[in-house]
Length: 331
Image 1 (tube, rainbow, N blue to C red):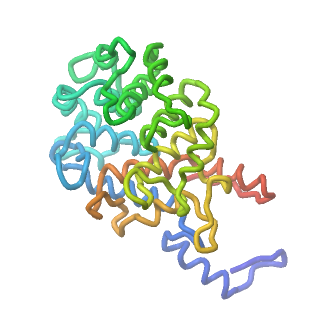
Image 2: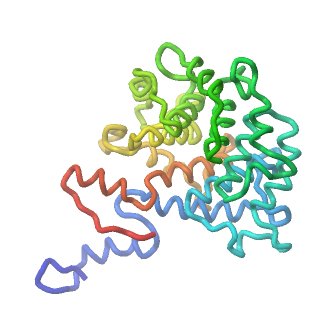
């Protein structure tokens, strides 16, 4: 029924609009809340029933601490309580316990970036990074710091160094000054850190520690946005992972990534980067990797990206600037 102020009445158009709504589909455009909910269901299906952990990639590598920490990060940012029964294995192993079991092997083969990835999952799950997996992750991480301030190799970009820093930041611990200076020194002339992944992660670091971005960073990031609305790491089409890192980087610096200013007109429709990513979502709620099949790495990145703005308050604030007011919604 519809009600235009004179009482409810049966209405054809309202009924047609209600059908996709009660089916859990958004009308007329895809909604981030529904897509995020489906991604959560995907990650539940991808969780290993024996270890309680996740693979990092869907096609190789097996269950490890990287995939498990990434899943924990995405799910906790989506408001999921990982202590609920259906996230535990038959032996009652929780995701954080799975991470603690898997972490030593994973960290033994890496540097600060790997430790930082684990630290982010531990911190977001409410764990203690100073006593986890048989050691103090903060000390382990900072012990990798080189004389230049690097926490990890930058042979392929600064993303691993930034991941190491984000682990420290997420845990609420002191970020060593040399690591900040090192990241500042890696900026290239256009104000970025090279590719979108490194740039997005560096932007997240700067925003989280209240460091001012170079004056031309935002302009360069905007100019590198594809006509389709996202960012690419390889090739010419939008990458879920690269787009998600840039969106998080913008958000960390108080820039709403789905505003009209950060949207593109595609086939006559104003389209933002979230809608570009949502268009790739598979029927099971997962997001695809390079193979086109369900990929934990892409799904966790997409879920975190879709949750930017939380329960819609930021969207409401954006709409209010155009004179459109929405009721407060509790998800």
